[in-house]
Image (cartoon, rainbow over all chains, first blue to last red):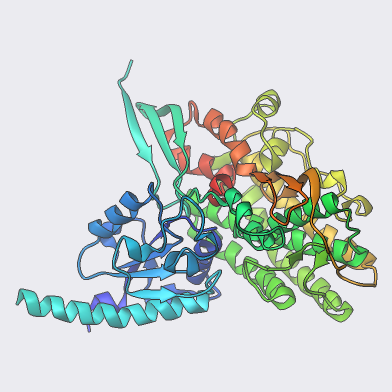
Length: 145
Length: 359
């Protein structure tokens, strides 16, 4: 097992969520839940990130930004869609400026349910994502060797 | 004269939990002008009134913003109740005060943490959020939700808090307050924090008034404006004074929020002491007909809900003017002439809630 699984770095971007899931993502990093003790660090730079946490749905204006962040992240990488808005659009699905979940634009590996998603659920999602990340890394290694 | 350069700030930026984009026109290290562009998280939820009836819209209103969710829901209910002439039972009014003030506590603690983060004071950020979790515990035990409560309801509230639980809350608030004191002292007295805040981004009283700043932003500049003084819910029976500071800089805005924390503790204590017995909701039947403009005080300032109904179960128009939207002109003003390194601090001093702003 390599460092990427033991200490994954996450990047967070708010699509068009209501802020509820965003502050829960931050809450997961702070003392009560403290994922930093497992080596999970929140970074602001997509080039350093292994896990992309997206909250909220996508619209015309933020699609290029979500895609841009995703493309700047080095392989292997996983995407976690946090909250029901990121999965389908949720309560805002019928709004004229909501195009649907994040899955419409970039491939999503893990969906975390909830409105707002609880920090426990987010941590659970990240743990699931680590398994996927490991598999992706092995595939990627087999490809290059 | 140096050349002007444009530096983009956001939408994805380490200091911002939410996307906002600013084009900073920079001359050397000085910001000459800031051009904000919003709309990255616009959803268009005001138009949802056409497909969701006035009862269902309560849930949508609560999800305008995850931080001041309860006050959004409550303001919407307050507007509809006024249109429909519903008399909300007094116990529900007092419970609304308690949840509003708990929201204010958790929002201000969250803001203090983010503020410390923008200063690069990581441990202070962690301490603030540690205290905030204790407030969230009280919220979770009384409503079931951590950030989105789902307690607001047209005609009252959805959950009751037993008197025994209220006494327990009192005890726990005392613990939180004791724990907060040393942290608050760092924000108000610490040399390195003051060094980054004092005299940065001064907004004079006249400017705050002319640019229609609201909430702590206006109060830090000496404008006496607190919507709670309008006496909605049962605020007219609570004894408190708006927190005013006069220097109008980033430090004053921090101090206003720190002092508001103590004021909120006091309001919750008064509300618990005066808590009346009785029902927590009344049955609401029929459809609203008429219009009303509800104004309440959110952690970030004044929120305005305009509701127009025409006797149909779908509202004709819902308009929400949120506090961050009102504070953006003031932000642009304070950014003019500041150092580039102070931009994150100044952006945070308005306590930006972008999802409110863009709805």
